[in-house]
Length: 369
Image (tube, rainbow, N blue to C red):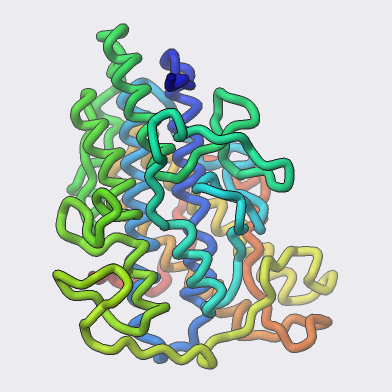
């Protein structure tokens, strides 16, 4: 018999806040790999990683829209929202951690594990006991010591919870429509933002997230015909692009060129404590963390009644390029030739709702598809 872990609106709020943290937790690792690539090299890989990072922003927005639709208040500045890497994620067995590491075969392997398909054998297998050897970043918010078979199953639990709670609470979708981020504010090329106002639109938004990551029913493509994130990363492992009709393990498209040597060998999971006290690199690392905190505060502002600033927040994510470069291009003293990297240790004083967007006036990179 399936045991429900979502009984009421408060449970739904807990799950949706956890889902926001989950979607965000992939962005720092993807950006670290992306910006470790030498400029002008590995264009195929850089494009794949960059597009997926933008689509993770889409997923983050879809969860925020569902949360707002039931009267929640998204907060990306709350303590613990940004994980301390390495971190465990709730997608199946506790067989890997997510690290901040340079573009490498190891990084791509981790990205595939993050996005891998995983349908439980049955609904009663969706929830699993947490291993004593690992503590997932996101387990069941309402069932202590339990985790999910996969990210897809995590979202299926939320969908079933929404259906159950909505059946007994006709006023569940009570949120202010003005807090919704609409498609006019953000377009990623891999799907548009869904405005959530009822159960049907909430289901559509959450299933888009799962399908776009893992593929529709574990297939190559999502419902909109886009290659799922898992298979985009698999292309980097297999060395070819997929074409329609390909077997999952045998893409037959054009060759994909990768040079693993054209990458800054940044320190894996660098911390502020790794930087020499009083050094310029330490200052740059702290400044990056403050800027990233301000970026999260800008997103919080967008999700709390000012959706018009969301497009600016997307550009801000890529305006961090210069701050990344000031770190990854430089060796980190005392690290045997490894290079510096952002630590994503966000200061508490970053706070919500910045008055001036971070990085204003820097060169903007267009989001391409």
